[in-house]
Length: 377
Image (cartoon, rainbow, N blue to C red):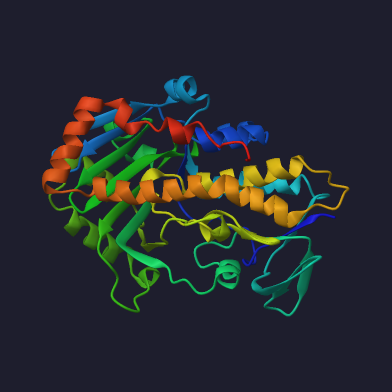
C-alpha cells in the first residue's frame, strides 16, 4: 500500500528563501542517495565568520568546507529552499510505486481507530491509512487535534529576507562564506546559494507588527526604509550588502516553548514531524535539518520492520518520539539562547565577544549536533 502525501497547495511552486544544512542534515541526504542532486544546486561555504555590525571587526571564525568533512564526516551546505524542495520532490516522484502525491488537499480533521486513521479533507474527501504523520508546520491542524489548542508564541523578532546576485556585489562580499553580523537588538546573516550565483540575506530585528498588519501587503520601499533606519549605525560593508537586495520580504517570527516530552511527538497512530512538533527560532540554522532528521529516523524504524506484515504503528511511533523529542527540545532551547546572545548589549555583549576571542572555534562548533542524527532508540 503506497503512502499518500497530502499537500494543501495547488502546485509545488518556488517558495521561501535560503537555508543552511549542517553536516547532520547533509549526512541524511547522502544516506538517501541525494548528494549529486545537492551538489548540483547548493553552495558549500568554506567558513562561518562572525563580525561586529557597527565596526566591521572580526569576532570569530569557524572553518567549514574540508574542515567540516574532517571534523564531522560531512560538508556544510547552503541552498535555496526551493532547490531543496525540488530535489526531494524528484526523489519522491521516482518512487511513484510507493508514494502518491495529492495536491489541493487540506486536512480538516482526522479520526483514529484501532485499525488505522481516516483523514478528512476540507473538500469532503477522505483518505484512510495505517498511520498519520502531521508535517503541516507551525499552525498544524494535526497538532491541534492531537494536543489541543496551544497558542503559538510571538518571539518579538521580525525577519527581513531577500536575495541578491553575486555578480551585483563587490568582490569582498562574494566570498564563499556564511557571514553573521551582530549588534544590539539585531543581527544579519548572508551566505551563498545556487552554487554561489546568488546570496541569501536575512536581517532579524527586535520589534513587532502593529495588530492586524499583513507584512506581505507592504511595499519593498517600506521594508528597505525601515531596515535602513534600524541599521543606521552599521558599517559600510554591511550596508552595501543590504542596499543590494532588490526585494525584501518581512515575516514576524513565532515559535513554541521547547518540547516537554515524547507525548508531544506522537500519540497512538498519529505523529508530528518538523515544525508541527518543534518550531524553532532560526539562530542555530537547524529548523530544516531537524525536520530532515525526523524523517530519517522514521524511515530507519520502518526499515527495521517487515513491510508485508502488520506493523505495530503505536509502538513504532512511540520509539520515534522517544528518539527525537529530547534532541529537538535541546535544539529549540539552544536556538532561543543564541538569539539572546546574538542581540546582546552591555555586559553580555562584552562577555560574548571576549569568549569568542578566547575560545575561538570551540565556541562556534557544535559536534553534539553535527555528529547526528542519532540512531533510533
